[in-house]
Length: 238
Image (cartoon, rainbow, N blue to C red; front, side, top):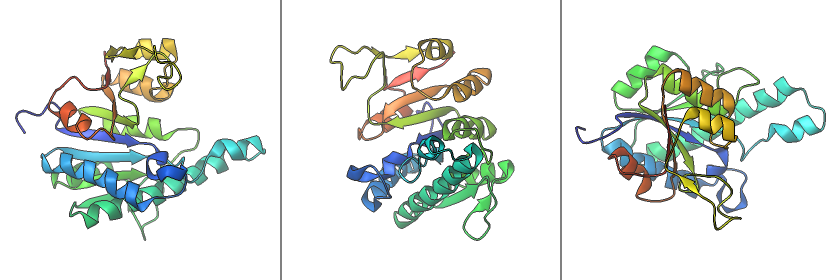
């Protein structure tokens, strides 16, 4: 543990990470691949918490475009995150990683209710904790849920898992001259309107001096390298 830069992390995953090549639904192989990445970190002795989105199962924007009530759309998204959390939990447990799903919306038959002190206790007992159902409130994204839970459990960093190796000034897939940032301040992210996390999440991290590290989870060396203090991805900090 002594050589690790971060001892407790919150990993923020998009729902699309479980979607597989089709981009929707839950792909069991993708869940197993992500679980193997988490297991590598877990075996290093790092405390790992996870927040996962729901874009592979439900996009509230589609409902809103048809006149759906915003709160209804958001609650549907929260329920979808619990489905993703259960899929990831199953993949982790099958790889021998003790895991707990905690839900901000009470559903005792399938998940523990979120209680901050209990979540911290699970981490101390070396269990991976997956937070489902966002913040439990409509009008807040899973980005904000990640920032909130990371602050509550005293995480050292929020790791935003993407399929690119950091934050760029434009889309690197469309612009070969796109510039990658190695480090950004919270204010720079807000002023440049960079799509790191939504503004509420960025502000919450800024207010609590919680760094955000954006990296490519699908690079087999990125996450482990970041934990060892290597220059990986893009760091957003004070």
